[in-house]
Length: 312
Image: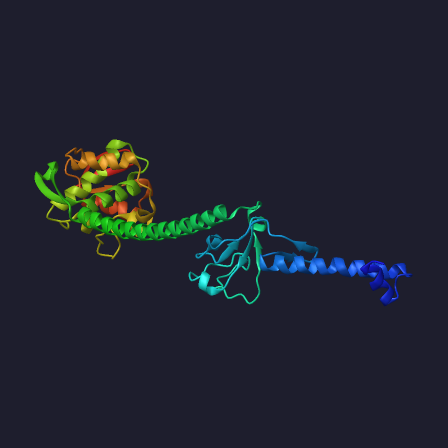
């Protein structure tokens, strides 16, 4: 009789087959427990489906001190405590700045959910570093652009103000042929001459426009009128009305000066004069009867050109 038979006889289970099966099962389980204990010591990973040995042993070098992630070969990343993440890396899954990562339980993050593909540890680390550099570069560029645009606006405003000041102060000596006298005209005066000429002679030809400028310059040169273009254009009569009807009606401020009018003003300032010394002009068909009568009784009519009659 073998020792095994003796053991069975003592336990009174030899004649029962199920007893043998139970003993064999217990023996197998004992061996498995020994194996499992050994694997735990050597770093076996567990899952709900059973026992799974790690494909590769995780080394200390796999941990990124910047991101606070441990990387495994299956591209899943486990967050660690705040000591591994001193830079307050943004929690992209949560969509907010969570500060230093303090995780009571290990949490797995997979790159597949936001990249569309899984990456190894080196690729993911490089991606995060490059993303950080790009964001810093964009922020710095926006700040530089904002400062540059603000500076350009300030400089442009200062330049425009300076140019306006220079234009206003810029003075030209203009010789008035009819009175053989030189007068001073500024850039501001030129703009006013263009407006009043456009308002008074929009439908006239080049000569008709030049004649309007001639009359105003003649008044500036004459002792009977103010000594500046601006004062002549905005002078009022004894009744308190402006001398030039477009100023009175407001048309002076609404006209759009054409290139032809600008050219006419320039030619008059350069000495082109057809006025014969005229100090007044009138568009008879638009004038009031009272005004037309005053012109006829108090002034010397010189000639007519276009729709205007000129007097002295």
